[in-house]
Length: 262
Ligand code: HXC
Image (cartoon, rainbow, N blue to C red; front, side, top):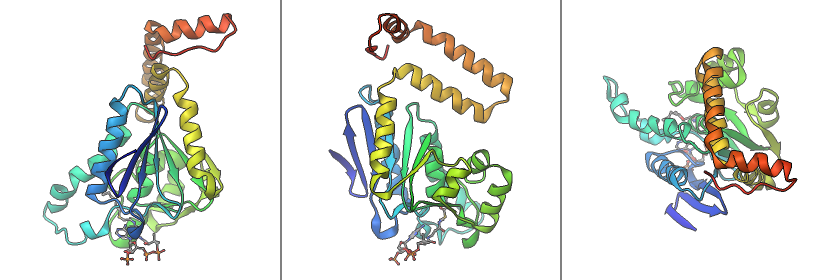
């Protein structure tokens, strides 16, 4: 186990990289230092050929209660916010742009920047105590790291409006019913279930997984005809891979394929 900083724990489990937010005294508030460490750790896993999937976990009480309000409170107007926060906000974009799949393991509060962080990941495993929301309006601002965009794409305009304009929070089961999370599990097992999902993905051929991830993400950004064309080109490219030959040969030889990631 290596630790970039005590507030962010970095571990590996086979081909799965695990990053855990660990700042319980502030309900995992996402300071600049914490987000620097998270991006460094996930970026490292993304470049590591031995890692095929990642888990970004919080603690049982909080995934993250938002960006660190203490770091924003005294920022003045006149362009100071952009100057001081643009780089911080880019952390969320960097996580959204990772090539390998990232599963968010969410229990307790996922608010503001915390909800945005979970949504920047590819899938969310939630515990029964998870609470999602964009309460920025209650402290005089609005989301700045994707809360009006990703939430709208995930749950639709009506609910996103209500959450962003009133600070309404969603309990785990509601979040599941609106398609914001993949599954809801007992709090004791949110991390193990997220790891299980990551291991299932890590056992698939990595080139195909990464191409499929990029293609699903493309669906959020493009119109249907462009997305279909992106998908088709990605599909064709996979026929250059050894894993395509191996997968289809193993099917007829009635054996388990052995992937080499090429
Ligand atoms: C800094 C925070 C924090 C935050 C909690 N804490 N959230 N510190 N930034 N976002 C600290 C509290 O000050 C307190 O410290 C300790 O964590 C425990 O919090 P309590 O409020 O005492 O706990 P509780 O009563 O259980 O209430 C939990 C809560 C509440 C409902 C989650 O803490 C809360 O409303 N937090 C803020 C949520 C929020 O507004 N998030 C959006 C932030 S803006 P002490 O020292 O008193 O023990 C944002 C913009 C994103 O995220 C844009 C990207 C940059």
